Image 1 (cartoon, rainbow, N blue to C red):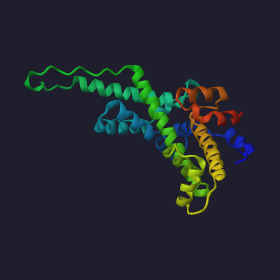
Image 2 (image 1 turned 45 degrees about the horizontal axis):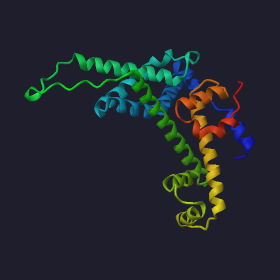
Image 3 (image 1 turned 45 degrees about the vertical axis):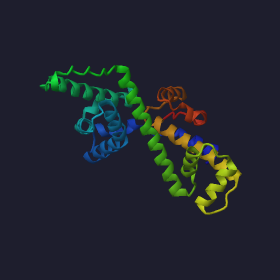
Image 4 (image 1 turned 90 degrees about the horizontal axis):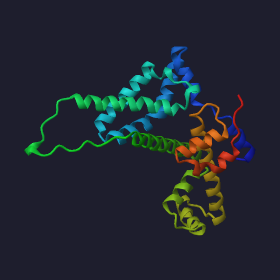
Length: 252
């Protein structure tokens, strides 16, 4: 992708707020499609966060289903792009679900511990731990979606960006000539060290563009500064420095 093509792509990123607005009302078919799109995008982050926060697969499954129910019955209608990021709204819904879950557990009758043992101290769940857990889950979901997008590009174009980047991650100790030798056997064609270096560079740029697009979709017409803040908050800025320099906010 040439620089001017990258600029054009990054300046035309659509946001999830368009989907949110479609999911709030209108033709039933459009509402259903928008709801399904939102759930598809966020279900991984939601379940991963709930499982990490509760450490109980059964409880995480139950609350994930409750989240989906609230989503589909329209609780998300209160989401407003003027009031902040969409992930903050999702986070608020999940925090309330977890609080309600703990509240229900506290009012249930408890069994006496065997042999008169001292009751175990309740594990604290401070707000900062919940915040960090949600950010971690959200970041992992964005990275997973970016890798999946990179794999789709590789399948469509034959450009092995994902394969090359994963090979580098798995073999950080290898230099370009060594990578070329091993990748030649994997791809069954002779590759040069220069080709490897070029593909690594292009693959990193493509990954950065795709990740930036994923983050930008969760904001409403973000400026470069707003995107930088969001990337920094999520611990993703290190991946997107070059893509951020190319980013041109959509004035529409």
